[in-house]
Image 1: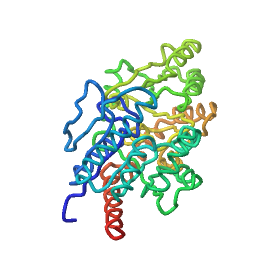
Image 2 (image 1 turned 45 degrees about the horizontal axis):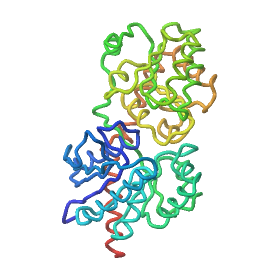
Image 3 (image 1 turned 180 degrees about the horizontal axis):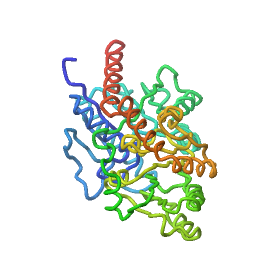
Image 4 (image 1 turned 90 degrees about the vertical axis):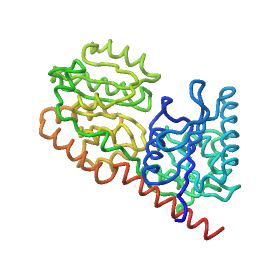
Length: 388
């Protein structure tokens, strides 16, 4: 191309705010695209302690300060994002919205008005996913109709999400499978497991690790019950719960009721999860609904054996069990059996961790994902120039 390809990212929230997996992927992809020579801007919600505009990591970030609350605040962000997109219409070629919420509406409307391709990346499938949540309200159904009509490409992270989009009436020719990515240099296998455990006060422990929100979607009460079973046969096992959320008080109460206060640590939110990955043997994700989990990618990249429910993209990520252990969602004993089997075979834990790392290097490293997105942008831009 004669000029650098320019991408405008739209996302509800963006670091350094506390964000979820979809928003973290937006940041990671944006930084990688800059490394590939693209020009990237981000439009996102603001906060009182953050500047309205800043440049960092080679990209620029425009924040729209919140006004009002609830629907009023969403409308303020919608119109603010649309105004920024209009004002900066000569600064970008492609609009890329992350998650099918307010940013996606702004992307579709301005993309249509300016004849610029708008991409919407959906985040999750299932009952907590973008499609089903949207279909539950009139406002959400109107939004899906608008996206169906004016979006140029819709990103599905897993087969279930792909099927939901088709069932919701999205054009099959505009729905495309893509992967999330992980920085495989930053997340790498630990050199000395025991020293990392000592730093966390977990000497001589066998450590299970969960990273994510403490919310109903993650099915953590079941994990605690399963872990309680495990402690009967493995007295040195320990569980780290990294993250926070609405279920924390109930989970803390359950921990006390089960007599597990000395075996479970609620770590809370942390800015860097790598020390916890480096100290752990097994990563666990017991969710009833997921898209393509960042936490799972980071655990795989860090060389951990992973025990994950068969939801979202987990089966594909773990190569149908070749690179990790898949269990059925909601099955406590299935989860307990998976832990028992692994803990009785330490060599299997190491083997699965090595295979998980290899899987990341070959398929999910952010450099691979970044190149695929660049190819998609160039394809859409070429098609747009031909037809317009």
